[in-house]
Length: 193
Image (cartoon, rainbow, N blue to C red):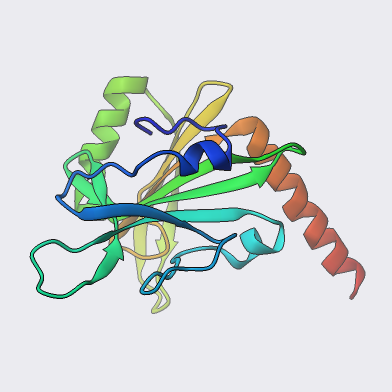
């Protein structure tokens, strides 16, 4: 992501001022390892992330043009659309490091972001599947992956609901640390049965 490379430390991340594409005022970050400021609540944080020591961070801003203060998730441009970024940090034994940057955005802009990624990184590996809704509806789903050996970009056409796509940047070595912690947690839970 522009100006925020995977692998940076949590301290380096905190020194970065969130950039604004939408005219928000007072952009700032909030992270799960510190008390939340008034009006701020982290969203879409998987419970198992917290259980394995992941520090989750998100950007917030004050809405412009209001006569009162209203804190909102901070959106940045993603191709023709926009979405709020989420940042996940895991310990490498020395420091908390950024291993995942994720976005959920309106699926109306999926084709545009896919085209931009294709133009910049070439043809992805694509896995197709069927997305099932809770009501039993079925929709085509594609998961596209660009992998350079050090990091990967995953674009999921339908992510949790039919009208959202997910874009995830992952640092591969740090993600392996995360995957091992998740597997160990599952093993320990299974041993209790």
